[in-house]
Length: 563
Image 1: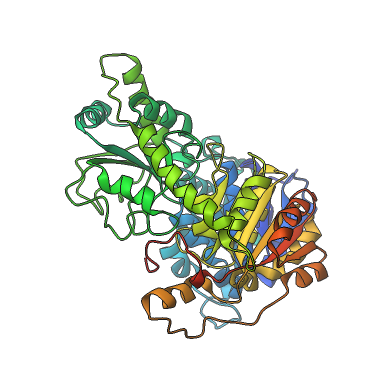
Image 2 (image 1 turned 135 degrees about the vertical axis):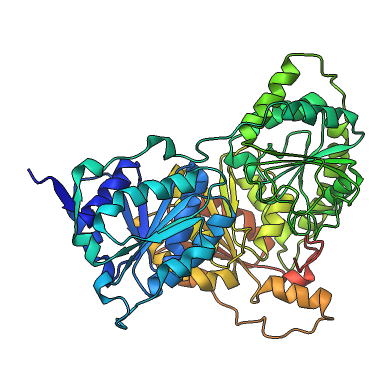
């Protein structure tokens, strides 16, 4: 029996050891040995061919966010490496663990001006948590192990491995094909708070008059939703979330007021944050969107900040108490202290505050949604989805029109990961790939990708992927024949001076039909809900093209367009 295997075989076997279910990718010359190993070896990994490397990385991201397992994408050298970048930086900044494998030209040809030569390690360095170009075949197993260790520990993020063509043929000893099983899921190797820190949290909370919790994406990543619920209910505190923090509590929970900030926040949630005398940021960066460029909390507001990433604590606000810890472990420790007794159950009237704010917010929303007549407005679309989708539905949004409306007004009934959007960098064309990846990770019957027609232009080639693989998601295109977010910015901030934001009306339903999707076009309000129901219940790839009120004419839940 041969005591070694090729580098390409070793790559497949290492991914198998890490229980990788899917590889999303696109073929190229430098990838031929890897593809041959995927084909000829006996293993359970599914490889899905995409039509654009960006989509491969978005699929890996959607898969990782839904499963808590590492998402894997691959592409060839040169253009493949450059095209795959958007998903890597989005995942890295969103604390999503994805591994990008890009094959490369042979080491022997470095510096000789071969076709597709690029310094992949330098290219990927600022966009990933860790990356390297592997220089020897027998280094592949330990570099895979390091990639998984880096992705899943501390603050999760993306990693990259460059695999040159020639090392895919080099010998790798069988004995080095093993995985560290503690890195199959993220977050791994969780860190607990330092001794005594949680007692300090409780002292500060009890001393406050109007405390507010602001949850970021870290709560869901840490799977800390139930511990959060216990803590919130003990003190009856109001809870706000960032866009990424949706799912920290059920949005029908009496203490959950919803999203706050400049995108997807409303005047009602903003007022709750402004009135706070103490803010607990939980797994939240307190960045420009959630704070509307740091207008609230005010500079004299007392701050508690708990996050697994030490970089974010104290970055934007003077912090009275900062704790670097996993949120599940931190909240569990807080709840254990409360259960031991001796801590007064000081009620902060959070449910009452939230009820008043929620009633005001949704009264306005329903008035607008039900006023739709000649032109369908975005509120009517959200209402139609709320009345049609099941409690387990997963929604994936592109930036632009979809994100603020879903974040402000769609109420996710369950805590957990039911909403995905690319809040870190907001590249158009994200939702289709991420929704396909989310479906691969969950096999959920209701996965909805919502995009504007600008985003459709970035991703429509993947409709072929959708039908070839048979992924039964529903795509909703909000069609207003413009890059709506930018046009609305020009409307509000530049005295309606519009420049190069409009494009021609497209019949997206016809395009989708030619790709093999069952599709509908909606122009009248009375057709909206019936066609949404038909598409969502079809259990096959579907698309609904909705001709919608332009964003610059709408009453969008956006406090400020820039930032």
